[in-house]
Amino acid sequence: MKIRTLGSSEPVPWDLLLEADPDIKHIEGYFAESSVRIAVSRERVIGICASMETAPGTWEIMNLSVSSEYRGRGVGAQLIADAEALAIQSGGRAIEVGTGNSSIRQLGFYQRCGYRITGIRPDHFVHTYGEPIYEDGIPCRDMIRLEKQLVPQ
Image (cartoon, rainbow, N blue to C red; front, top):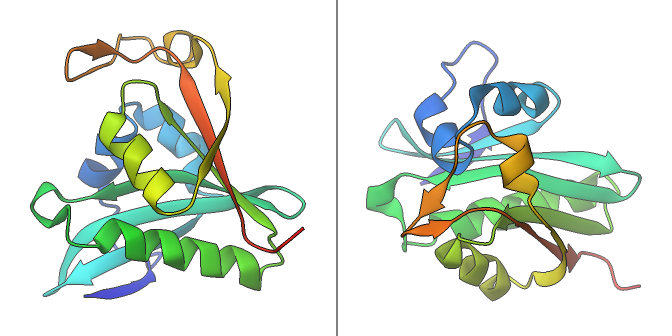
């Protein structure tokens, strides 16, 4: 597996992006400004991570997705490490991510990668998305914010 930047002439792997964020308009709102890195295995895109600087010294992972057949194999962790390295190279001191209260697997994943919960945005998904979102029968209402310090304070 190799991680590299998505080329401007390459097709965008919308299927992966939409797994992490079900609203194409929302994705289009951050995608063009993001650094988009892809994990490729045997000429196939198996993972994607879009991240960007959202404030001086602070980066955010806007979208992270791995093909279902490659989950649990370290692809997501490698994409996270790559995003963190990119942020550090660009002067980033911290990196953030937001995920749904119903995203139990993702919450565990980010915490295993060293992220700590820093806050909750109540009803974020209710107000941001037109259609209700459910994961494993749990309504996705609140955004859980997590952060990792990249440079000691």
